[in-house]
Image: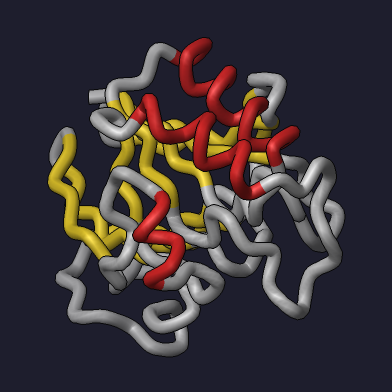
Length: 177
């Protein structure tokens, strides 16, 4: 299975379109959204082409391809307008020998670990900073943000295929963290 992982769209039509284009270009099986889909939040400036209603219209046809977890900016109102589930705090995925605990990152993160077994992957967004950290007890991966990257990181997503992560810019160029 080829899993496309993106986080923190924050209502940007421009970056939502770029994400969907990248998803199709990658020919991924599923699109995993790690939260903060429609609202920009009070701590962020408005992202480029902020247009939540248009983001809804763009993502809705992909409802059978999308897996999603709730971000700190996602609400029950957002669930009322999106045709795919968005309110779960986390999901567990078992893909290509990997056990992934996928969450947004505001509740479960490296400082507030969920129950994980040795070798499991904690996968979250929220920080807007790509990450790949491995210790004896934990693997932590973060795709960064498609719309509001921080600390000089690129607008990015992640591909997980054959048990391995690859970080890419929205134009599709792989890069090393």
